[in-house]
Image (tube, rainbow, N blue to C red):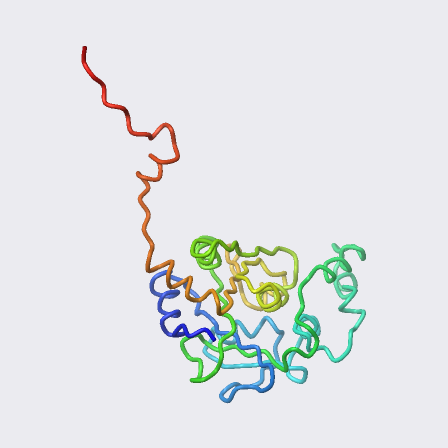
Length: 245
């Protein structure tokens, strides 16, 4: 059980790291939907934007607006070839080849069927008491994505996962849980559109066991550019003292 105070994490992300969009707390509802959350008829990845706006929401097999998202969350009642083989990618757009579309879905992460009954999202600073937070998602620029997703790499040596290509719902919901690692991702065109990402913004997901690393990164942040140059750049190495004849 991870006991990082969500308000402390929110403060670090917003005040210290200057994340401009509100951090979102994600809960994987394994056996019940927490009180205080309302159903949202939106695409799966769209719950990020809903929570950024201040809502506590969830999607499930009955409340959603995207079969692709349901499939990546293990919530689709039965495997649909339209989704599993990526046929939807070629039927409504021209740049995917059938082979590439099929491989895209085969290589994308998804939660095991039935492992959750719903996926819930809330503002990180407005999660009801007692609700477990499984991950936090931020939409931010590349510099802050590097710092947040990379927090574990400087505290325990675990590199984050970077994804370009899979659907946003695969990258930001399934990959972090399946791989138990922080993820930074571009998301797909639809995921970016539904969450209104600017051209330079990325999704970042940090699982609960990496929360403390973000706090520790900031608490221990120190950088001496001159000293770093001396250590690794020959042109900046201290000059040996000269001695007269």
